[in-house]
Length: 317
Image (cartoon, rainbow, N blue to C red; front, top):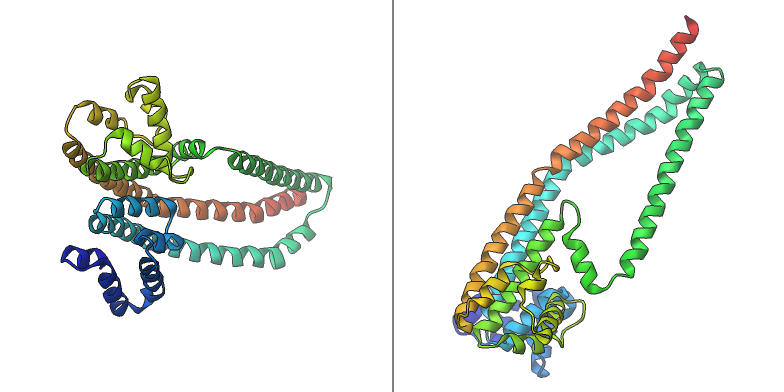
């Protein structure tokens, strides 16, 4: 709503006041923003406690270059799509989670009533050995998982911000989504700055003052190193998956800053659509994988009942 009011000529402060009256749930946030504006601070600084670092710097750049309305619209579109995908994920998981809850009750019932009765039927060292082997295997798997998880957690804490960005881009399943998001975020912000006449060197100087964990800061470090060495950007782009390969092509075309900014804005829109399709494609697999897990649990439960009965019948024969 704020970006709509800005588009029709409202001042930023009047737009915030009007939005607070229309949507009371946003009043605490907007009141804080209004106080920041009254104290001479920026709109983005008032929202900083409520948004991620990436969105904060995106708003900060837009506010500095007079593109706040369009940027708010883009962020609103992104957050709306994210919320829709979360809602769809919750809907897809509702039925599988209900089945898993019922299976948990079945397991409790089996452990309380059925397994003790089956244990009373089994005699002999062979069954005891099988049980001990199964328990040792389960204990070994749990300990292995805990050790691996602990090592990965320790390793992650000791990675630099750039290494974490690269690692996220190579994660299985969701790595491609991270790559598309980073490329969309980077190109959309570069488009804003280029459309307002900033050169690549000026962009690097601006973004070097950002937080070191931000994507824009990491890009400024990579691009600054390339320029300082006199190298071409495409020579290092492939080493950093959060930088789109097409960026070097756009920059080397020799277009004006405004034209280059428009082209990057169009490219960012394409990346956003690809990101949305990628996530939608992953959501399609949620229910089949969940039902596959449920089927595996059911098979294990059947085997845990039938195998002891089979061994007991062998003993009788």
